[in-house]
Every structure is written in structure tokens, then in C-alpha cells.
Length: 292
Length: 268
Image (tube, rainbow over all chains, first blue to last red; front, side):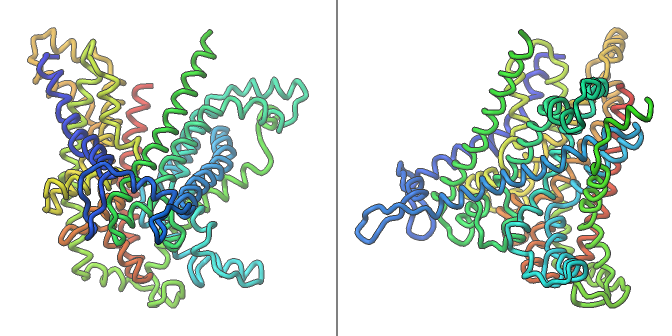
């Protein structure tokens, strides 16, 4: 490979990412400390008002009052992302394990079936749940038919939002969990049985520890996009229950407070990078643990 | 393996749970397709079979114009993203003793690591600061960036999976670097290149968050237009459009998955 190509081959990728990603994020950081202008614009400067606004509001006489409104949104974002991750995890483990027991051909087909809906446009998938959970939708009618009682409606509930989030991202959990469960040596489970361990002991003491790298990887892959999710809270949550993604979107849309929107975006970015760093450190600690 | 052995490994309820899971996974898709053939104006009241909503969707000028925007952006972004991914993958897998390899790889994959809403806000501010007004150019630039890692991964996997012997043999026979690439490397990585390009295309067609943030007159993509329709209320026409999108995604996805599976089998 020529020296020139080694250099010029990487230039387009670097140029693209610098221009559309790295530099723009630095600009977001700069806007987050800019001053908000009168008509929705901003003027450059160094002003931490936008970050202060996350915790405090200014009262009538310029005194700061603690206001938990935005903290609640941040907490809600974390709670929903954690909830969706946990539900995905609880579903993915048995499903992946069951798939791993099938014949080679069946495994391929089932993994294909897991990934297939993931390719369908996100907006269409969320819309589909809107029909199912909506007024007089499939879910309500099923309850009336089998349960015999009227339900007050599923749409715009936490359950609807969680359903949409789990549905959107669960293939990202199943694939890594399946990859680690599939490698599991059946002899280990037999050994645990020979030592009078019950099925559930084998699950707890053999399968779970061996599947934990996959569970961890899957949790990151689900948790991170859930933090920034926009469509589920807007359509299934009804837009009233703000999450960080929708809060950012509002600041750049109707509310037009770019510095504040930028500050929330930087906070979200910091949270995601924090998760990634924690994960990398954990993986590193694990490596040194395994190799003495 | 004896029946008793497989028994220990079976867990009661896992089969049922998996079955229910797959039903749940395909229920939304089935529901949209089913209701798209509903004769009734009300989405959830079935009165008879009809294909009229497909006809009315295809006659909807705003919808067709959004589709045109989406296709144009997706095709151009796919070409750029795949070309950039290809040259980066070639250098990152073939150059020996390359400096900044890890950093460069992270940079190429950066859009995958960061939340899309942050990237969307970042390009919006950038474009408004440098005064880039053209909606199509804004969309193509942003889409190229987040499609690149999706094109990169299958190409790199293919390059890493194939032995270097063939390229070395061609070089030993005094083939020029470009000839080696054109006659040996390119045909061998073709499935990966194709899978990468298709993935990039689907990712661009499906994008909502960035396209919505950059939405301006004349540059409304199909998902953004569908979103505005959903806000106005569910209609059977919306189901017909969604069904067409589902069909297109499933066909493209099947091609990519089969190509990837074949590539892996050949390696293994």
C-alpha cells in the first residue's frame, strides 16, 4: 500500500466526521454557554445561565429558586431507559437461551426473524403500536373480549412508552446475549445437574455468569439509544411526559432557546459518554482479572 | 445427545415465552398490513377488503414528493458513505504499522456511539451558523455522516475475513496496485460492499430524528411527512404507505442478511 494512499484513504472519513460531527459538537458546547438573545437567537459569550436553569428558576426579584422540573425530566429519562433495558434483558435471556438449543438451521431462521423487524422504519413501528394501543384498538378490544372489562386506554401511559421502547431496541439485546449463550458448553449444565443442582441453580450459577458479557453489552446497546429517544415519548407518551430527547427537540423547535437546548444536549452527551467509559473500564478490569 | 440430557437443559415455559415473544414481535407489522386493506375510513373498524387506500396514497402529491426527497437523499448519501467507508476500511485493514489506527476507527464509528438527537442539534447549529440554506445539501451531508459506519462494518468484516494471499499473488505477478484492487480485492469484497451500501440506504431512508430537525421547505423526507400525517390522526392511507415501506424494508433486509450469512459461511 503506497504511503500516499495510507494518508489520503483516511482523509475523507476524518474530514466528514470533523465537519459534521466533531466541530459541530464543539459549537454546541459553545452555544450552551452563550447568552440567549431576545428573539430566540443567541450572542456568543461565557454565561452559565443555561446550566443554572436546569436546577434553578429566577424569581421576581432575581433571586434563584430551586426548581426540580428539569431534574424530574432527567430522572424520568433515566428511569424509562433503565426500565426498558431491564424488560429487554428479562425477555432476551430466555428467548436467546431457547434459540441456542435449536438445530443449526432453526437457529439461523430464528435469529433472522429477531433482526427482521429491526429493519422496518422506526416511525412505522411506533405508529403500529399507536394503532394497537389506541382508542378502540386491538389491545382494548382484546381486554374487553377476554377480560370482560373496559380499560381506561393504554395510549399515553408509561406502559405504552415502555412497550414502544422495548420493541424498538430489543434486537440489540438479543443478538449479543444469544452470541454468549450460544457458546455455552452443555457439559457445564450437565455437571451442575450431576452435582444435584436444580435447573434454576444451573441458571443462576452457570448460565447467568457465562452469559453476563452478552447481557452487559446488550444493556449498553439498549440503554444508550433509550436515553436519547424521541419518537416513543412524542407519539406513545402523548408528548406531555417530556424526556431529555423531546426536551432538546422542543428547545430547537417551538420554545426556541438554543443555549438551553444545547446545555441539555451536552448533559445527555456527558451521560452517554459516562456510560461508555464505565463500560470500557469494567471490560478492562475483567480482562486483567481473567488473564493473571 | 440423549433425550435425558436435552431435558436438563430445557426450562419449563421458555418455549411458550419464545413463541409469545415472536408473536409480539410480528403483531404490529401484521396489524398495519391487515388494516391497510380495510375498506372503512375508520382505521380500526373492519368493513371489507379494498385496495383503494393504496391508490389514494400513490395519488397523494405531497407524499410522492416526500418519497422523492427521501430516495434522492438516500441514493446520494449511500454512494458517498460507501465510497468513504471503502477507502477507510482498505487503509485500516491493509496498511501495516499504521499510526492512529484505533483513533481513526473510533472516528469512523463515532455516529454509532453518540445519541442521534445530539448529532442532529449539532448539524442544525452548524448549518445555520455557516448559512447553509439548501435543504437537500443539509440532508445529504448529515445522512452521509451517520450512514458511513453502517457501510463500513460489513466492508471491514469482509476485508478482515479474506486471506491476503490472492492480493499478494497478484502483486507478485507485477499487477499495479489499482489492477490488484480492481481485479482481485473488489470482486472478493463485493458481497460486503453490497451489504454495506444496502444497510446505509435503509438507514438513510428510515431516519427520522435528524431529518426532522433539519426539516425545511422542499426537503421533507418520507418519515418526517409520515410523522406529520400521524399527528393529524390515523388514516387507512397511512397504513397503506406503511405497508409499502414495510415490504421494501423486509425485502432489502432479507437480501442483506442472506449476503452476510453467506459471507460468514464461506469464511468459517
